[in-house]
Length: 342
Image (cartoon, rainbow, N blue to C red; front, top):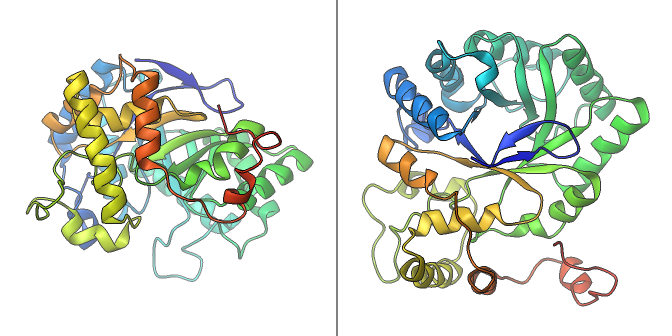
């Protein structure tokens, strides 16, 4: 497994990480993702570790905390220095007025609760699950600083921030000497390239590594969706399509057609090609893969150890290209001053 430096830090993470959104299956949203129990999770964790996938990503809201609990149980018996745990907090987790956001109150409470569920003494990477516009950035970052100094957290990151959210946080961290966000867990896929407009250039400039969530376009790039065919009965899109990133049929099938061509040339699956494309994109430190079962996991593991050719990358870029929002389409016309990320 290839290891990559996470942003502007000395921390190295595997090119593939394993996401635990399928653990637990509690509630109508997460039950559509999967319902992996402790025994199944142990098997998946063992396969990951054997393959060098040593980072496991979770969040407190995944199945109301059960995903973290299952992950903690599945990791028992493995040496702590053999794996990396990243988790997220900030979404509503409880009915109280302070059970949401990035306040000192909520962050401190959330981290201690996550450590109990994970059965760990520290979190390797803590990410703010979303920007909290109601809490001063100084309060959030000073709290993260306290948690790092206390040994509860090693590195901090963000998730689902806009460019100005992330830049403001980095500026405040630099001003006061607080820990910088070294990671941004963001949605990025062949059918969702908005990340490239602002967040990718920011990541290059400021040293923030991308940890990619939903790299298969919310389950659309698994190879099961085809032009002119109905949605397979087993697809989780039946229950979650309206809660994830929107994708037009025209874009989806244009990308799938290009993936099909390259699959025939390379002997790789559509999912493996889509993941490999991401691994060759600027700023990407790690791509989070998920799996309901061992077969899905082993297929996704086949995304590493080889590379798409320059011509194949070019064809996928062309098939997945869309017109960006203003001012990015305007800036793209002036490559002399605004070169594309390399």
